[in-house]
Length: 394
Image 1 (cartoon, rainbow, N blue to C red):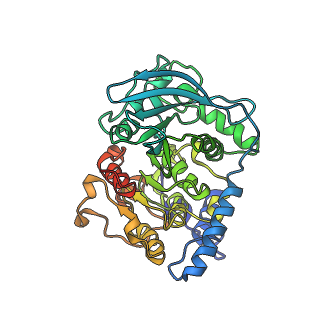
Image 2 (spheres, one colour; image 1 turned 135 degrees about the horizontal axis):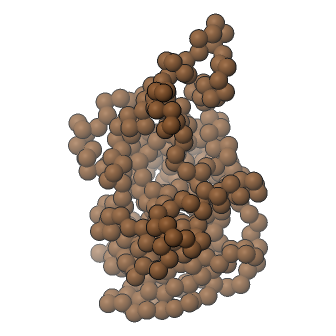
Image 3 (spheres, helix red, strand yellow; image 1 turned 90 degrees about the horizontal axis):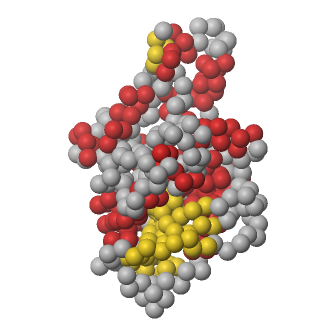
């Protein structure tokens, strides 16, 4: 059956109520006014108060575990490459977990000659070895590859003279169970159910681990502590914006995904076949209670005036909100916006401005957001140019 707004979600009752629980909830979401949405009417003083409130609420919604004293991180191996060294380390965020990561150090970087550091957060399916251009691990769950000429962000950072730190997503690659599937999501979805039932969420645990890691990074005297950036792609972009909000040591963020409002996207995509009527983005994206307070454009607005690169565009309506925040902070030069190559020219982008709240297919919502999903990847050139400018390299 074809599901449509007119047939399934539009009330036929005089009181405008719905007997369908789904239809009722989507109507609620259409009317919802998030409590901490950014307003372009803010004064600068109101913005600073709002930003503090957003940070506090994010910290609350992420359901972070307790920070506890743990053993010091340990180096596992060191391999010399042509112009840099790759070290494998692991750190210990809690009593149960060992988190592996790779550190790529350019030749000549020392305490006397420190370099900027960049944390590299991959998309949903990529391993740290892939990001670093290192040999892939034998575990089939570590071997997913797409656009290798674009997505090796840690390798690009170290080649540009920065110390790069590459991570696996939670329950992916070396951080996942050893399975025979080359793709992803089989055990991660199960993990997320366990997190939620335990009072946690996937983004919260992931960001918690990065906050623990930041304590270690601050001990590295060959990293310029005033020049610590985050590079991200797709799933990793969530960690990037949240870490940028919660950690004052972050001095630049590359957000490599298109910009949309997840709440509006959820209730706008009403047109589908019934066997496709599902939120197929994955439960590893979910932060309980998020819709009540803000959306992705609000969180990105709250980063202002932190240097920020948005490398895959989005609907102009959402981009304008972020632009307003940076203008309010007198920091318009700290914001870089680029689009998918398909939408590089303004004339090629959607002519809709106000976000539709019903009546779209998933594909039509992507068109509204100027998202070329098959071409989704890390944007090397704009990201490197951004970091080089912000960190005064070359």
